[in-house]
Length: 176
Image 1 (cartoon, one colour):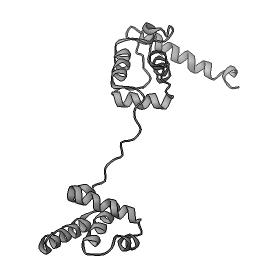
Image 2: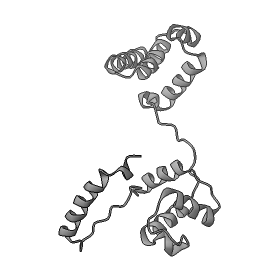
Image 3: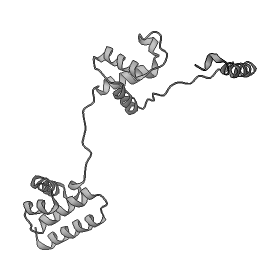
Image 4: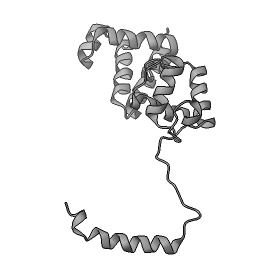
């Protein structure tokens, strides 16, 4: 690499480091810049208070992909417990069936524990309640409680009940 290209890269790294609001990115830019300026990786590591291997990894990434190689990527995380086909089957089951239709007799609304039990029965994969709610979110399902409205309710009888209930609340029976 010729001297003018090296100076251009160093200036570019300085500019990115100044504009960066992320301390980790600034550290990456500075590590590469100091190395390109001729300092040894061990010295750069000592200056920035990071390990030699970290500086080396930054340089490898920079050599392979340039400035884009220094970007922080989100780690992939743990693999999902269900395959995409199994997730689609769960989604289809929840959307198109009631729990009583698939063997959970008294229930008419899907809950995360019911879905956990269904997945265990179908795929022999055990889920926690929280894990199932996370899966619901990933699949675009909600796990809110259903609300019921009585379309044919008589408003006069409802008002009468509320008045009677207010009287009952004031009795000794409710004060325990």
